Every structure is written in C-alpha cells, then in structure tokens.
Amino acid sequence: MSRRSTPQAKIDEAAWPVRIRIAVPDMGFGRQLDQIYAWLNEHVGRSEYALHADGGFVIGGERLDRMAIYFRRADHAEALLDAFPLSLADGTMSPTYSSPALPFGRRIEDEIVCNLYNQTTAVEAMRRLFPGISNRAGNIETGDVYPDRTAPIVTVQDGGPVLALARWGLPSPPQYHSPSGIDRGVTNVRHVGSPHWRRWLGPDHRCLVPFDRFAEPRGGKGAGNAWFQVPGGRQAFFAGIWVPRWTSIRKLRDGETTDDLFGFLTCPPNGVVAPIHPKAMPVVLVEPDEWQAWLQGAPAVECQRPLPDEALELIEEPR
Image (cartoon, rainbow, N blue to C red; front, top):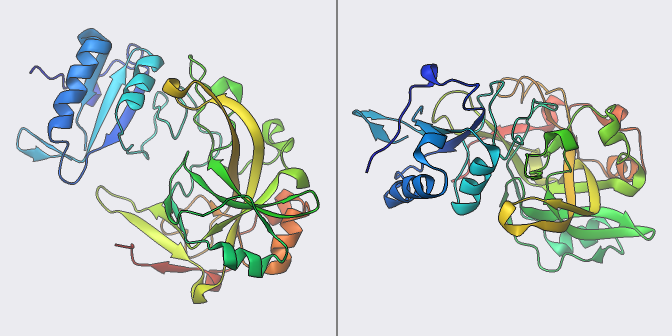
C-alpha cells in the first residue's frame, strides 16, 4: 500500500491548515496503521491529507514515537478521530497546530496544564468529609482521568453538598469551535477576567474536583509524566468550575449532547512543579476552610495561588 510521508519542513501550512499529532503505541500500530491509511484514502482522498512521522514507529531504520497528519479541512481530521481510538501527542504548538485538546484552528487562550489526573474517591470518604452529602454519582469508577471523560465532583445544590458526575472540559468560546460546530472543551482556566469565564465564577458554578495525584509531561521524547501528590494521604481537591446541562457537539458521530461539564483553575507553579512545568499548575485546596470558601464564592483571583512547596511532593510515575 502506498503511504504518504512528507517532511515537516516541506509542509505548506497554508495548504494544510489542520494538523493532529498522534502518539504511537509502545508496540506500534500493527494492522491498525494499514486500516488508518485505507480509511484516509477512501473517506478523505490521497490529495487531501499528508503524513509526517516525527517522532514511534520505524521508517527508514529510525524508530519514531509520534506521527503528524495534515489535512486541508477540519472536518476530515474530526472524522478520523471519530473513526479510530487514537491517543494524541500534544505539546508542540504552532500557529496551525490543532487537536482535540486544543480545538481546531485555536490559539492558546489558557496554558494547557494537568490533562491527566488520578482519583480513587470513595463515596464513604465524601460522606465523612461533607456530612449530609447527597450522592447523585452512584458507584464511582476509580483510576486515571483524561479530558472529555466523566469524573466525580462536589457541588452545592439546593443548599447542601452533592456528589455528582460531570464531563471534563468546559465550553469553549464559539470562535474556537470547529467549522462543523464541534467543541472539544477547555480543561483548565487561568484568565478569570475573561468575559467568557466570568459568567461561571459565582457560587452556583463552583465545585471541588477530588484527586489523588496529577501529572505533567516531562520534557523530551519518551520521558513520560511527572506525578505530584499531597503528602500523607490527605484528601485534596482542585478548585473547580462546573456548567450544568450544557448542550454542544463533542463528537461528530454523537451529534448534540447535553452534559454537566467541569474544569478547574490554574495558577503560577510552586517550586516543586516549576522544574517540570514552569508556567502553571492547578489550584489545589487541602484545608476544609479552603473547600468551603471556594464553594461559597471566594473571589477566584484570590484563590489562584500555588500550594506551598512543602505541601506537594513529586513521586515516581505509577506503574
């Protein structure tokens, strides 16, 4: 089968304005790569895409760990991601770079921070921390949480605490939606002065996002993630924002869906996170009075301060 492979330096970015970068599995794609090529040739057309292997499978004797696919049209890129369960290799940005982590054609509004965390929240633990909490989440699935996945949050509704489930990724500004209307969401927010975010900063849209540890990617190819946790097994939360009953198109194949959505604030990094991610870290709340202050509507800008260095530790990447 013929395969298109175009050196990145020769890509005409005006002709190929949409780019997705795909992480190559440790064991390679196997037959899936042939399926991807066949799908592209049938549904997109050979002249409508180009592929550049820039980083996990072997081409010309060189082992690579990423590949970039360039498209002339955003809907072709969206359709590919709907057709195949591909993991993205986000991190390198350019004026034309696009991916589901950054909606197609978008310029970065908020620094991408912590797009992976782990939570082992137990309903009984939330009951101990928040007496009288109403459980609307049912049985909670534990493990790693990625963007667009469902995870537990704690909100205040009808005057009392509520444990609920929501989808990770707040509504993006309309200008960042794809040409076909897809909004893949914004995972974290730093610029709280933005008119887009101000409408959701009041107490009615506050939430706590429980977590055990969060990840930031290390620099360099194949370096993996750095993981951070609050020492001593203390319960920690991200300072979250939630938007209930929001109707949007998250995936082309699903059409419009109505979801409860959430994201969380970021702030400058502390001395533990800065060597890994020098621009930002999540706003982490560890004290019960901080939880209540956030839920009750403490000014967001006053809460955007990093956790003290001694209150966070770098740990080995979980296996």
